[in-house]
Length: 120
Image 1 (cartoon, rainbow, N blue to C red):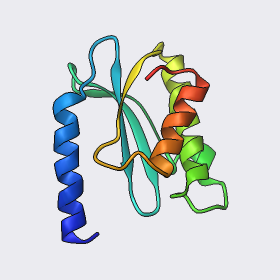
Image 2 (image 1 turned 180 degrees about the vertical axis):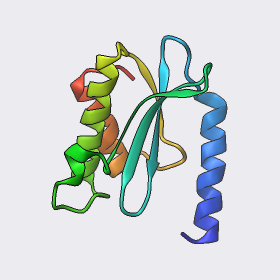
Image 3 (image 1 turned 90 degrees about the horizontal axis):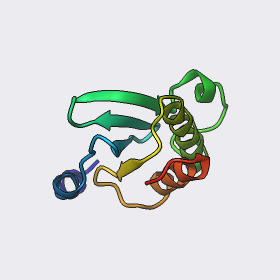
Image 4 (image 1 turned 135 degrees about the horizontal axis):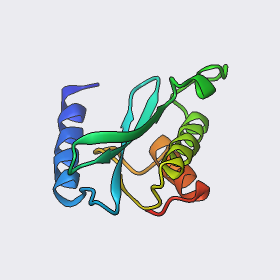
């Protein structure tokens, strides 16, 4: 990634994190997107620990023969993280897009999480 794009993402991420933080009743769903994969984790900011995580490297998704950085895979990761959160009793989240634009694979992941049943 070019230096200007990286610094722009970091500036957006810092600006978003000033406003978005999880509380005890609404945990934070953080998204990380690389060139080849997408990762999502639900974080408890007060305890500083990850409650649930899913990525395109998980067994359920890794066996698919498609590219792991596309919108279809992001939707599967969103469904997987939402199912894992519901199993742990989490129903409300705050969506942290981590400086990425709300477009493409990030948008697909967020919509898939909402379709499964999480509020946020």
